[in-house]
Length: 225
Ligand SMILES: O=C(CO)[C@@H](O)[C@H](O)COP(=O)(O)O
Image: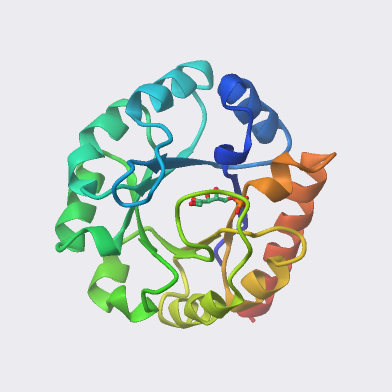
């Protein structure tokens, strides 16, 4: 049964205090930290790249960096992100023509490989062949590019479709996810939860982390029956 994993999106955090914010999230129960890498090409925004991730990794060596590569040429950054301490390299299927080779290259650098789909991409773009070799599948529930957007409920059936085909994989949702939207995500079968605004803007982030985790674990227990 895939376990619940909460991956706070640091995009909503205080960027000047990244390492401290990551430590605070880990102390609050987060297993992963979601690092939004945006290149200004694949998405109309620029955030951070390997040099910043490397600094965070030096400050928090045990961190699991869930690197969401919103970049136009995902093949280009595998070595840099691995050298920076990335744990999972998640690329967009829309940005590559050979997902299986890219997954092999990511694995060759000892990172887990994730495959993301944007809201207008069908879940079937993740073919059985691609899904079989990927470690994680990411269904975006907002258009990639910035935090704080409204959750797109119409993306949720894609989670259910992927969960039916890949019962043992990690399936992540990202965008507008929080206490008000977690139920539909968990019921559809998502077990890795990215939340930015809902966690970082909460008076008690650790309470939100605990509540998201409980909802997901309860839903996953139903799946395993
Ligand atoms: O990658 C993205 C958006 O591009 C996400 O990771 C968001 O940054 C999540 O933030 P919230 O929607 O939870 O505020």
